[in-house]
Image (cartoon, rainbow, N blue to C red):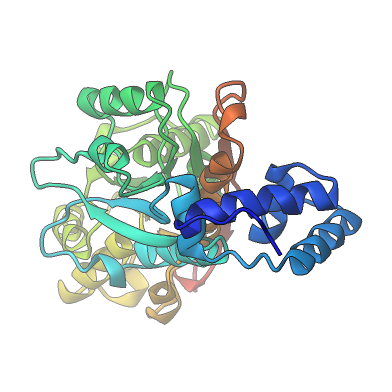
Length: 357
């Protein structure tokens, strides 16, 4: 049927995709979007492309597409180095990775999980250069000078990447985040509306932007209520249940002046609950507690833990969709400003923060 044949299957698919475009009367990029199910396409156009592909017997597979585009077919996901932590069982990581994986599968990509080295140095640029990954999603980025410089360098070289649940003030990186300032504000406003005034705040490490955002929301709510920001009500954790147990020991001697606690994630909040209970604090003397993330564990504690629900699955899914979209029309990337997405959060009220419950 065709006079032109090539030994390399990827090259043959390139020629035939052009022929599909010519027969359908559309661009080659449109053929690619239709066959990969990417982006909004008119139904009439979609049918025309599919009919042309069927007539020509064009049936691309994932490997052929990767060869034709000189791509690996891998979406890289950079994960933080947390020794002894069971990352994949943590609500935060499992939900985000589920969202990423779902979208990657729909787009015909595999995931390449990349753990940061213990010293923090991870050569993501090298993976791009060696064509091990086509695009990259970064979790656990820190507010550090070296991190900023690495990201700037990757951006200058045109590597498609996206930060998840992290942003850098003054920088223009692709990012998909949640509105943690608003989430923290909602949590503290709820406690204030319950009549609590001595609200302790247990935050995560300040190297993460979501920690800074949550502190900003905490302070905003107190300032609106005409209450001072008191340093002796501020405590530091590392997002682990163990750090919550440690904070419970610090708070134990101050329960006569602390009437409520807002913790920056559920694990720390649950650790505080357990620590105070183990120390002999009776339910009627337990301070009101609000967590953050709305993990499955929040519903299983006794009493049920009030928490700020964060759409982690949607964060992962949207980040994957947006960064893979950059690969479809790379010529437009330089003209388009970096995307910055903020997804809304929602306070879920349970018994742990309701007064006189």
